[in-house]
Length: 538
Image 1 (spheres, one colour):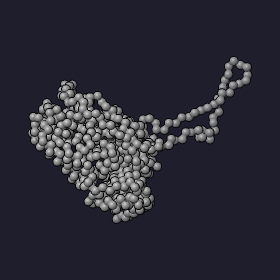
Image 2: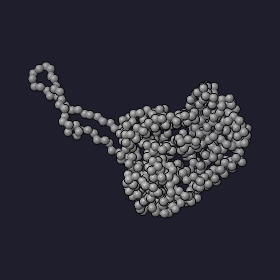
Image 3: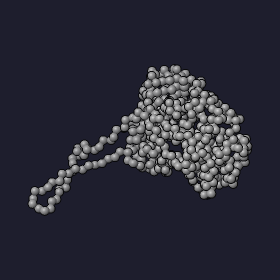
Image 4: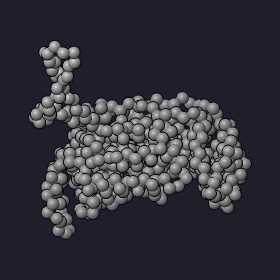
């Protein structure tokens, strides 16, 4: 890891030339400078750089078409496939938001020329095979998994979903109806956590291709036709956007067969979307009005920091210390949930985070050109929503100004040295990390993370934190019932006292005195209230 603060000692000595007439001249040993002089010459620690006014779109790497990533394991009976296309919701045409996700769903679930959707499921079931798709802002993944005994049949099906899709009108209508329900019912009504995160994206990336929900908008989905899907598949699921991942008992013959079959995809299609710079305007708040018994809080800001930056690993450790996802070791978890009983989850993230179902880990292949740092808190009793937000800011500020104590640093580092091993415990996850490394230009990412952890010190981490974490740059998304009253409290910022059902430690109550009036970095003129039922309408 590159030192975060470089220090050099310059030693100057005047060479005294004797006046005697000799052919050899010897310089006397230089005198040591007095202690005060040494102290005066010691370089001061560099100040944190000025906050950027925008985050440019520094392009991700572009692997060659049909790049093959292989993790062979002859001892395994399971063959894993991971086809990662560099296309996502950023490629949705304006007015047809949700097209990429819907197209991927129709390909993966809608059947092939030789199999209806029902027959596709019937064929996969006796093989205990898996076939799925997932779409994010910039990437779409088709994943497959099968026992090697069923490989020939599965390979035909897996490649046919891309090469010979059925494009059934009935399946198109079914999947579009499901996507609309996911917006109208799932996003707006059922999932406060997702709603808060999508609202934060909409706020941070306003006017940017990241701004709309990956699953689409209501009007966008309503406008999509089957012909749109057919044309879009040919435009974005192309050879020049595809990385092929294979794992398990993979030999050269299988590699050649897969590459040969996928060479039937269009060589190229639509030009890549040019992502604009993202302004780093802070102090904004979006309050989503929804009939709910709790308040969800998401806060964050766009940052040029991403994988490959020397500060990424130390900042990741610091935010794991602050609030690793679904882990009880985080400061926010202990201070807000355990000590104060405010809510369930209090987590912090150094990059775009989506939990992989069935795990506590981040999904792979959701890379972003322009990343953000975020904190997530929910569910909170509405009366304590502002206090919980202030509490998160209070402990974030403490992290920036006081750093991580030595003992806590050692615990966090030891935890991550082990925990990162769990992130790569399956073939699909190992393939995912290897493919992400191609796009970020970070070969051996997890090995590099562990190597960096071994070299870190509290001082190096705290220096990176001071350079990169900017509480004043935060923007906020809230999902709550009485949005107008909540917005008023954000605007006027009155004290937000809290009462407890049981006695609390004096140190906690002392912290609370500061928390209840902690300034919210929210501008009174930058607060919006939006009804949930109209969110992501168009």
